[in-house]
Length: 442
Length: 196
Image (cartoon, rainbow over all chains, first blue to last red; front, top):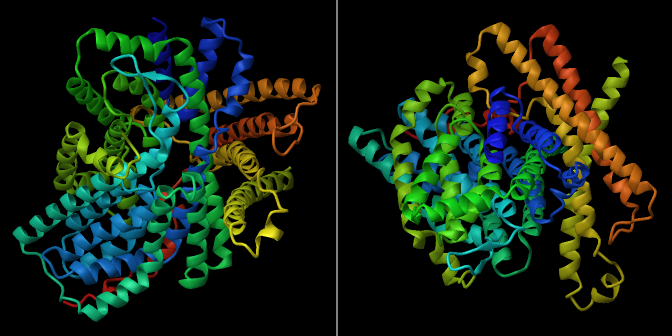
């Protein structure tokens, strides 16, 4: 009963178009005020302690690093590297775009930032050699989607944070630890590479079938120069992932290190950033981070309310009692998340849904890390389709195309993404193999 | 009044930009310090400096940044909601609904600010301090009432200008992410060495 009231109120408030964070907060307030005896003062404390965790602080650091890199020339150098390697294939410039997006997202951690950085350089180049606009735009939108999956990823940090802190029980009543940021990062590697290959294959097939123009093959000398030139940026991937894996830094420290590193290479090595732009980058990053942290604060309040009303536990008991197995459950989860992806942006979805779905998933014996990767892939797809796909909006600004036309343009790659989602959902080994091999996971 | 508002705007911007920069530097230095003490000739100098407070300071700086940044975000229109339904409404209903949303925001932040104020006033009676930095807790928590009241003010400000002009601040993702910095270089494929 109370769960109906809570969700009804939340959905009603959200439909008025008010910020999601405010809708969450008002739901909690009115519920506490009218329907329970939980002392309202405990809320004020939660509003502070909600984000008082060091893990969450990785989010602003990664956003800052991403913004520094977007402002500079790392993206251009990565594109040049990818172009010299595979540019001469059918659709080569497009595949180079996807590969450059994969590389860039591995340093920036953000999907829209990748679309901007790669798209605004790559799209004019693709049009210049005679690719149709729709073809180029489709590559850019979906290439950016790799940003969430290839570590470091802000969505993974949010997932780890929103599911940690409570005790969860597996199918046989044993305690299950929630996924750590480091485990999720490692788990995202293999799926990210597979997705990059699948998207490239789609690009290649369409370019080959329609016989789009090709560009001449680069020499090994050009390839080497392009590699050396982009190696400062590529080294950042090694620092972040290697540093976390070898235990040099915690994920948050790695994020701070990559922000400083990004600043240093853009400022002193590539010299693409000037001092005048620094305050602007800082302010834009602070703005974005504060928005996400504000949703986190209110989502913590919301999940506090749900836990005190026993909603996730009741739902978990109901689902396990109704005989739904993990296969059906994951199908439902995917549908629910894709549906939510139609109207909300990823961090809010994860913050609201993950605390509810996670206990059920664990109860059904689904690995926390695998479940996290499924959620991340769903969020990527949500960013690429209307009405609120953020990548679409960003790309429509770059390509000067309407959302409707762009939505048709991304279809071939969107279908590839959906096939990939099915693979990720039902073959846990894709996500779990690498962290297990590295001994980060049982 | 205009001058006061401009000072407030600048203060808000400088505060959050400084906090994110400072937090990054603090964590960077703490990590460098940790590995620096491993180098033998630096050890005698570095061991005297303590960085155990770095994490706590970083958290507090980010919490302050989050509270004031959220207020700044209302001004820049970065707090997005679900607007599919609202966009389909008739203009008169649409305006009323958007105003309702803004007032909801003002109401929520006002309530939170007031609860936070009561909480801080209560804390100020005690001599509770933070674990590592040992600053009085009430100063740390002061960001809740200050940030929330500022955010409430920003909601009212946006609602006021929306009432009069019908315009909302709009956050453009591709603009802040630095598109203008890249557009110059993106003129055609020539630079990429693309030959036809």
